[in-house]
Length: 345
Ligand code: PNS
Image 1 (cartoon, helix red, strand yellow):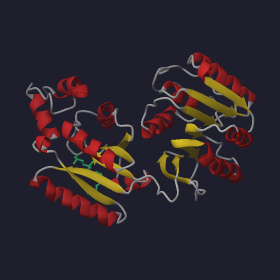
Image 2 (cartoon, helix red, strand yellow):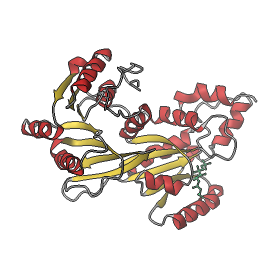
Image 3 (tube, protein in one colour):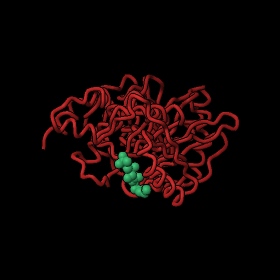
Image 4 (cartoon, protein in one colour):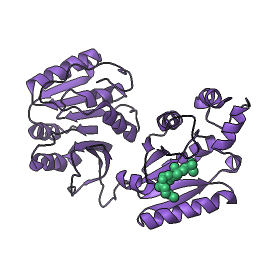
């Protein structure tokens, strides 16, 4: 196991103590991608901390401080060892003990956290998880987020909390935030596409969608029909690069039906860009089919900006393949890569 990103990126973590089931690197990366990848200060709280990997990842990605709560002595030793390896011990507080009493103490001290990460053992009694959930609204700072991992859906949330669940293999990850008054759950939208490659026009639509929705998941289609040069994972990495400044945008590879993916992500809308009339027919057909497959998911169209109305991934591929410059057609951060990947052959 390694720290995935940030100042401690690549640091290898100590051997996992017996009885600890750590979050895999892949799920940890997906969680942080969904959270917006990087933080600007604030305090994190890592509960049932195990190896401390989640809290250390939060510190590595910009949280100022982190509190780790763990009852097993060998796990506490692993957390301290890992903090040492990542040179983050000075920004951490490790509390050895049961989680719920520790939370009551933190609430009593008036502590509030920007990010709370909880990976309770899946076999833990429902009462413990329920006890955790009811305490979260008092522990979250305004605008703060909590992430709870579980083996299945959490069921009804206590008053004061709203959230959406996503599933990563056998792990369900629920993203939670405090509701103020009768505020509604987070509104999540999917921006799907082949992104072969992502263009300035795509980025414009993603950016505008990120203003309309609380969270946007860019879904990079794995089953693209046109035999793309880059794997879906590589295309997704390019989207991640250009969407980095957008804190409420995450990127995922999508396999299978779009409406299924949207449901898994807790999304209520699919956002697509529309250029000239020529886009309309196929988009209309896809939207109608998706509506038939899943009536609760709406398709929303964002009209392309005039300067992008002529722009398409296929035009970028063609220009690059003949050695022409695609500067301005794709975001500068990926210009060199696109130019190299799509040139020739
Ligand atoms: O950029 P593209 O090529 O227009 O993107 C196409 C994509 C990935 C959005 C589309 O192929 C898609 O939704 N694929 C998922 C499969 C699916 O749900 N098909 C039924 C919708 S008609």
